[in-house]
Length: 212
Image 1 (cartoon, rainbow, N blue to C red):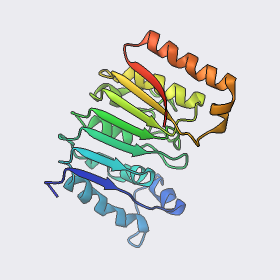
Image 2 (cartoon, helix red, strand yellow; image 1 turned 45 degrees about the vertical axis):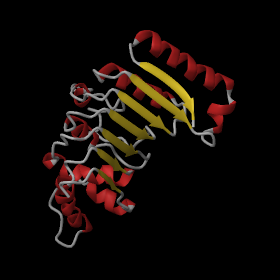
Image 3 (tube, rainbow, N blue to C red; image 1 turned 90 degrees about the horizontal axis):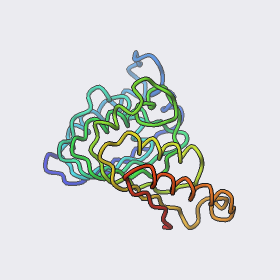
């Protein structure tokens, strides 16, 4: 797999398996289903030369089992991650720190399950090393899909603006059939547009709100 140009890993994991992934102890039984995820380390190391990489929400959380052995993706330019409110971002800080040449970061859904290990990459939980993984990442374009216009999402966007050092453009896409409140409530819409205007005044990065 050393010659792969692009890879997409889509795991399907049930809630019970995710519960075991989040368990504080690492002494997993031999017949525990989580043991099978050990092969993910080999798979991730096998695709470390790709330039384009996609992970779904389940894969992103399961990757937390192999954060310490995460390879450096020296060729990676394009990273796509999908989020879900029931799945965590524990692996995201490690991914961002191990992509020294990343240019494009595409995130489908900013809302994710909160853990004490995601605060390095997001604004959900306060940590002393807040934003550390972002500071070392050279990404210059972020695309946000499935935007709903919540304050939590706006805080995340501001967090990215504060800590990504090379960020030049953020494109925020609203789904045509997405959150009806954002599309129909003038107050919500005006609040979001107002914050984006403030971002453009405060930061050198160009922040765009678009319809998909």
